Length: 316
Image 1 (cartoon, helix red, strand yellow):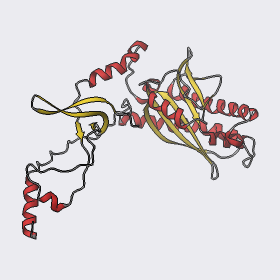
Image 2: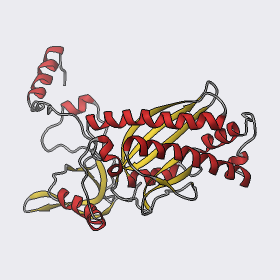
Image 3: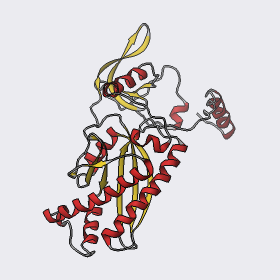
């Protein structure tokens, strides 16, 4: 088939005319439902201002512990679901140390977290031996752990003091540290706030994070407190699934991709066969919102194309 430039342009224009125009984009910002949205812009501003206050309390304590000028600044204020944090900590923070925080009556509400590198640097600074070999083979000795407990206690006390003075919130620290695992008894859809701090001098950087249930800091953030019972929180995952039951999701079935020469595509006519690389003994991939979820066989139902789902996709 001999196509000149003009005929090819006309053909491409006719093909474009068959494609419906894209609808106008919605005038809204993209929202991720993988994180809570309890705090709006105003609440986040208040939390950032409060993080500056906490940094000042922590800075005084670190200056005393390290015996040198240590500047502390808040790095970020973010929200997370406890389930996501728990998975992340269990997977990526196997050598971090955590000190749980409690409300009066011993209700766990959060924790302070220190990466292993920060722990070793704090111990070395406290011993006034910055070049000391602390935490050899990525482990702390019994003496080093004892020193870290004292450091951890002092740093956490400074944060609790900040909450008591400026937030009128009473927090207490747990008696013992937790090493390398999620330190709280809950790990579901609880809303949690993370305040990350960076501290140090010209040569040493320290990373310290504070994690608290959002409900603990509602008054600081200016968010009306919503009280829920343990039974209500337990039912939340089921309620989310019920709300999503009528949600519409795009489903597609893929045979397989195939490479064809442009010349062959131009000569295709009704009734022609296209040879694919997909074996007829291999089931088809069924995608839901772009993710392969099921395996199925092609079929017909009431004169229309259909599929018979034979199982879930087992690939990770």
